[in-house]
Length: 110
Image (cartoon, rainbow, N blue to C red):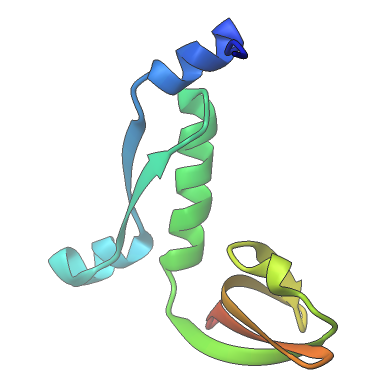
């Protein structure tokens, strides 16, 4: 039987960080604005706060769901943030079609 590294065991047993970050749309739209709620797997509160602010900056503006075809088998991009066509995009789906991959992405309208 293998043992778990003590530092890793403490990280797994620690409380998750639940954070909320209102976006600029909350100021303009009140309760109809976007507020990012984030459960952080990051180890430090400072890291989690920084990630929540990045998420609020992305989701605080209007976003659009699009599909983009890229060359090669790229299912590995699902769940990642990439710059596609010069625009920061979050890949929420990937379907390989022969030698290409159709990505479903979220992009900001800015």
